[in-house]
Image (cartoon, rainbow, N blue to C red; front, side, top):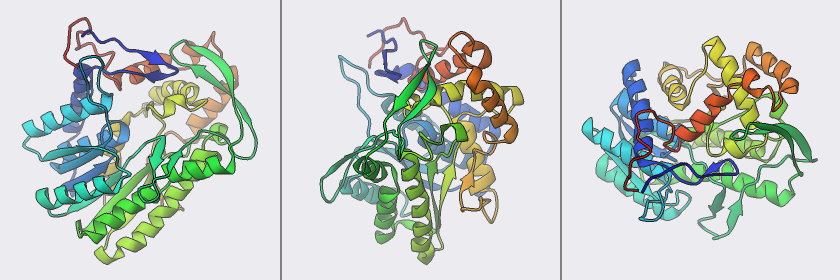
Amino acid sequence: MIIKPMIRSNICMNAHPDGCAAYVAREIAYVRSKGKIANAPKRVLVVGASTGYGLSSRITAAFAGDAGTIGVAFEREGSEKRTGTAGFYNTVAFEAEASKAGLVAESINGDAFSHEIKKDVIARIKRLFDSVDLVVYSLASAVRTDPDSGEMYRSVLKPIGRGYTIKSIDPMAGEVREVSAEAASEEEIRHTVKVMGGEDWELWIRALLSAGVLAPGARTVAYSYIGPELMAAIYREGTIGRAKVDLESTAARLTAMMAEIQGRAWVSVNKALVTRASAVIPAVPLYLALLFKIMKQKGTHEECIQQMYRLFKERLYGGTPVPVDEKGRIRIDDWELRDEVQSEITRLWPKASTENITELGDLDQYRTDFLQMHGFGFDSVDYEKEVEP
């Protein structure tokens, strides 16, 4: 079939296999251009390995550290009538490139929240590596089924305490408008924490510890975001923020739990980027369009792979102790939250409109990133050619 992007409500419903391969190849090329990372981990598990920061973490571990990797993700395969997800094609492409490089790379497609997948991963670790020295937790999901009770939880993107109205943009149409969100109920807050908080991360580390497959000195890191003050009500002070606070408190518990193997857990606060999740959060697309232009002008703009390479090289494996903030968090959002960047966003935000957004922000970069993470928009790919999905 000939595959063209199908976009509905800021969600791309399909993906292009050749374009996803181009995306993965570009990230690998970047890592190779930067060189090897000293003291990098050699046996790595990535939970949530198929897109975004998880995929970039896996690529960095493999091609900057020659690590063998196991990746876990829940993706849809392609069929004769519809494409697979971008994450499915990314994983296929990564495994092919890792094999060419002589690296161990196995992937498990299934529900990472389940006990069954954890058992499968433990069996593979024992077969492939005996143990792992890094566990990356980069799982992003709107729904989680509790593995013990069977209850299903759904996360929501809502403020807490009172409703909220903020400026946003339809990035494909370029239309700036106000959007509103009603306050979350206590049940919605609880559900969001159950899905996006630290409970499953802790279940993973408990299972790996109990099975004896965490190497002495093993490390684990989960990813989070704080963001600017102008989005605090919908993000850090909203339901997502409540879940991220839970994630951060989990890191402290895991560090105590891993003391028996001299291990350590961290939360890494990363930069705002275009992801499937961020594309549907109110205000974020507009913020990103402004942020990209400002950071590109200052020479500090980074995509997922640049962030993860910097995290591995300068933070996680850049020496002892690992540099953290006053709350024990690794901060890779440091360039984004510089005063010189945020003051410029604060100045531009009230001025942004449908008529001037292409002048004030880099909407083209946003659109390019959005399309390319689904395998579209690469000059090297012939999108008029029939492909096998």
